[in-house]
Amino acid sequence: MHRSRHHSSLRHRGSAAAALVVFGAASGIAALSPAVHAQTGTSSGTKKFCAAWLALDAIDTPGGPQPATADDYKAFAKRVTPVFTTAKANAVASLSGPMGVIDAAVRKSAAGDGSGIDDPKTLVAIDTIGKDARTRCGWLRIELTAKDYTFIGMPKTIKAGVVSFAMKNASATEMHVLLLFRRPAAVKSTPLEFAKETFAAFESGDPAKIGAISDRFIDGSGPFAVPQTTGYHAYDLKPGTCVFACPIPLQGKEGAAGHFMSGMVGELTVR
Image (cartoon, rainbow, N blue to C red; front, side, top):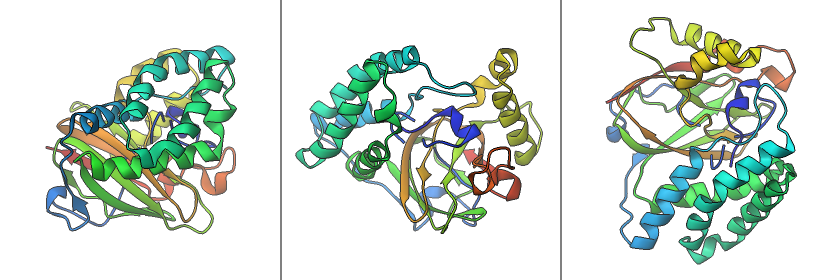
């Protein structure tokens, strides 16, 4: 349950289980990259776990331009609980610890208390399970590195389907996140222009402006990592063109330009 779309005002973390692509040096089809791997999850329990965890990755946590209310957290818990219950029931025994941490956070949320969702221990638990899921579930796997201010290891083209991204944050001081957006065929702006427009609309708080760009978000989240850690997130990607960006402000300062303005933005083609 990482922080979701309010990654775009990023003073926070990631969504209901972990964002995505980055501006990097690699090119070509992701399946041919040495940093891309695939395995197959076969058992019935594994398939149920994987489907549930993928669904959790797509659920936005409370918040956005406005702070989340107690009712927001209650609604979030109501949506998450049945999906998380399936994931927990079908998880391997070695994940019982992190599953317990997330369970406690969801229970607090059901009572209108968001402190468990915001607890760093919950983020660690989510990433622990995300790391396990990417190998257990047979998803295409891509490893990326986020540095100040670029992404290394991002292919320019990738196969459609479920893809799990692991983003290592090599920075000594900066947090990084990768958010992925759909770019409609009719939109011809550059990735930077597209990102600026999208984040400005979201942070305006104007319902009309937010509604106009709401279909651009994919899961509303992505891999988030504090310095010297790794974040995980899985997407079920459809063919098309995507823009990826890191909106966290420079040095985490309120009002500072997002990292995408310094180079952490780019384009990904999904085939």
